[in-house]
Amino acid sequence: MSLQTCIRWLSLGLLSVLLAPGISAQKADEREIKEFQDRVNHYLSAKKNQDIANKPTDSADKLAQQKQQTREKTQAARPGAQRGDIFTPAIAAYFKKQIASTLRGPDGDKVRASLRHAEPLPNVQLKVNAKYPRNLPLQSTPPTLLMHLPLLPKELQYRIVGSTLVLYDMSSDLIVDFMPNAVPAV
Image 1: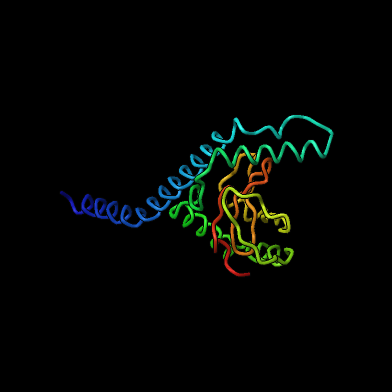
Image 2 (image 1 turned 30 degrees about the vertical axis):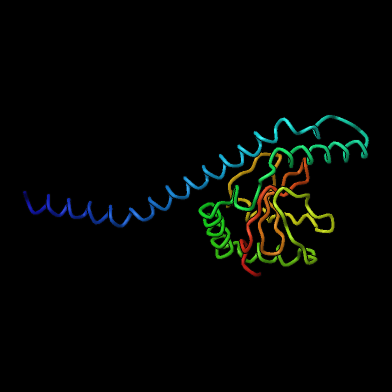
């Protein structure tokens, strides 16, 4: 084997060693995103037959009644729901990494400023499969942060409650899952 061939092989080996951590991290991220999407889809499948809140009506009272019925049926369909059903430890680690990276990035100051301008929160305990607390504002998630999180189906939204990331179901007004300490203090 010539010296030039040896140098090529060594270069390729060194390059693969240098690139391997980035490639394996990317594959791990893709795996966590897929797992998250599968868990979200499983929730939506379980909820699908319970959702009556989409029936057209002009009555605010009727809409509220439909939302309540959907919530009650969805809760009954998930009696053992608990924190971590969707935000598993591995998925939570991925989300925390994405959030921290966004806050360190070029738009981090804008995201932090948006979070600081949120309404003050009362002392509240969140619970999976429970109605979103009435006294709690529906704090939207800054768009720049949303760009770094997996897309959600139209029925679901990310909400931020203090430092907690909440997966919120709009049609049933339910907390699907939540992740404490997801957003560092701003």
